[in-house]
Length: 313
Ligand code: ADP
View (cartoon, protein in one colour):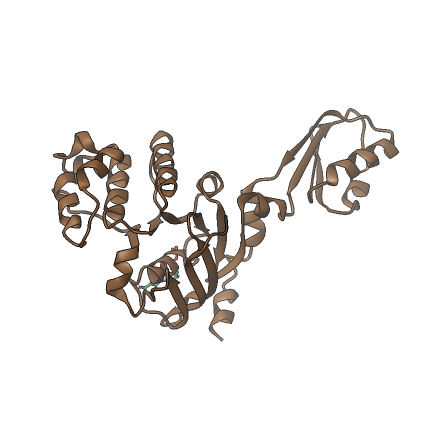
């Protein structure tokens, strides 16, 4: 089933004075995806999604959301795109029902709010004030408000920051449910776990640029520690020769446990080398690397202040 592009960003750039918020970002999000934008603070994630939502002016580049240019067609964009923003705080005294009714009034054909509230687990909280809701309930309400205009694309920014593990999982389930109902989800996050569990594809953004764009498995597979091989050995082994094996990026020994990191497939070469050395490894384990490792590889320069200066040239 070939998917159509839902969001296309090409050469996006946004500068505030001397700060390059977004240097040069291009990406395509396909219909029906949960697409993650992952990166450190200040990477330009919010600026990117707020530009996609038509909430910022841009310096250069083009954006299309189902054929609509959010920068020049601000009215039309609200008909296809719903947005839950990081900073979106409601009036503390507003009740769940009042917020839902107020938001409904913004759209020509809103989704009936009562069933929507029910679906998002807010049915029993309609008279509760925003300030009295738990963090998870507040986030569920903000998702409801983003969905009320029947959008084809929904932008969710730092959705689960500050939620306890149970509430996070509930919100993740909801996001999957939203996608299963045919809405494309664009998710901004700095949580590795969230990106890995929830997203079909992830763009790792740093210093205003896309450093990598792939499925979580693809990103992990391309990391310097795509595979981690560990074993115990009662005898000393020659670590240097392990490090020389093709694809191996690191080998270390700690308290009798040896860890070898490297590209997909290096475990076999490690075992061969051990055989050559006459070492029988104990408790041998081979595990896939983590998204953290891929992320660290790709964002290791993010503390380098020269990057932004260079980007300003
Ligand atoms: P992220 O969402 O990845 O944390 P942002 O898009 O919020 O990153 O910010 C990217 C950079 O642009 C940061 O250095 C931030 O300080 C700067 N920035 C964002 N919005 C503004 C603004 N309205 N005025 C000035 N600088 C901004």
